[in-house]
Each structure stands twice: as C-alpha cells, then as structure tokens.
Image (spheres, rainbow, N blue to C red):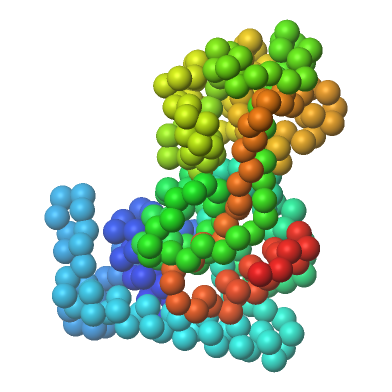
Length: 299
C-alpha cells in the first residue's frame, strides 16, 4: 500500500546506503537513485546530503523519515487487520536470527508458515546475537530470535524454547570412546568454540564463570564463525567442540559425532524472541504465536 518511492526512501535512510537499499529492495542502484531524485523533485527539497561516499539526511529528510515511520506502522496495521477479515494475510516480515537458530531451528517453521500464508513476504538475516540486536534497534528488522544472555535495555526479550550446548567428539578421534570426562580433563583437551560476539560463546563463558573457570583456563585452539565450520574442523582434528544439540542431532543419530558428558557441568539456555519495546505489529505477534505453537509452547 505504501508509495514505492517512500519505501525506497525509507530503505536508503535506514541503511544510509543506496547500494544496501538496492539489495534490500531487489532493484538496481540506478533505480534507487532515480526514485530518490524524483521524490526530491516532487517535494522540491533535498532529502540527503551526499559527501564523498557517505550520505546523511537533511533536515527535510529527517522530517520525512519521522512521518514515513508512522505511515509504515499504519500500513502494516491496516494490512494485518485486512488479513484478519479475509482470513488471508499479505504483508512483509523481516526476521533476524542468530546463527544456530537461523540454520537449525527456524527453517522448518518458516517452510510451514509460508505454505499456510503464501502471500506473506518473509526475509531472514542470519548473524550473531549482537548484530541482530543492532539491526532491530536500527529498525532494519521487525523481529529477532536469538541465543545468549545479553539484555539490551531498548529491546524486549520473550522466552522461546530451551536449548542445550553439548561437548562433541568426531567418530574418528580417540575421545569418541569416552562417555564422560571431568571438568579438569575438559580444561586440557583442545577445544573449538564460536567467535566473539556469538550468543553461544556468551552463554558458555557465563556457565564456566559459575564454576570459577575462565576462557583463558581452557585449551582453546580455534574460534570459528559458524557451527558447520566447527563440525568440519572437528572431523579433521583431535579436538572437541561445544555446540547446540539442535545443530548436531542428525550426526549424533548416525554415529558421526558423540556427546561427551562433562561431570557436574551442563549448559542449558533459552532462545528468545526480541523486538523493540512497545506493542509489536500484528504480523510480528502472529509469527511469535505460530512459532510457539509449532514447538507446543505458550507465553
């Protein structure tokens, strides 16, 4: 419903980039430039300052962004309320998920949701928890689903499902023969972890702290940016990894990996829905309830 030029303007203003706006809207950069120029001509005033490779909003641009945000909110509310009447929803929902959730938890939910609501346009940004939180604050996303213990005061956190991070060994390694190790043994074994800024590492660090163990006390040989890269690394080294059980359930079932219990130590965490404070849009609330229902959870 919202004027296309205003959508282009909002995207450029949000990303502070013509290139990123083009990617987000699936149009060419010249098309973005053309729409902005036409909007500026229609309004009779410049909306952006262009200095070198940077763009910033003019005072008129800031004013237009303020009202565009209100119009977008009303537009989403109208489309949702119309969908309730028609029992058929048409709108867009921009989701962001931290790596483990985006790769292993959300895909079956998204597939089923899309089958039931084929006219809904869904997009998913897959990144670590900190970047998802930032994207929400910058209003690039409508809803995030993250792991970790971080609590940003600008965001509301709603528990989703529980997850366990487990120590795993590959079947080709000697450690595969062990069922359990002590925490002191664990501290000596070569270990592969997720990168700094990931929700997984944040939770691991906090759980270790409760046992008076710091990351520097461990034999960490590598930090990697994805769970899949950790699994591939483990298949070619004499190391163990700490990853979500959701990310390795198939490999455990087929015998490729094995969980190595650590005596008197477990890492259980919550996954969270997160959004800006205030009442979420109808589409956002609908997806939260749908995902909870999928996992037989209730708020």
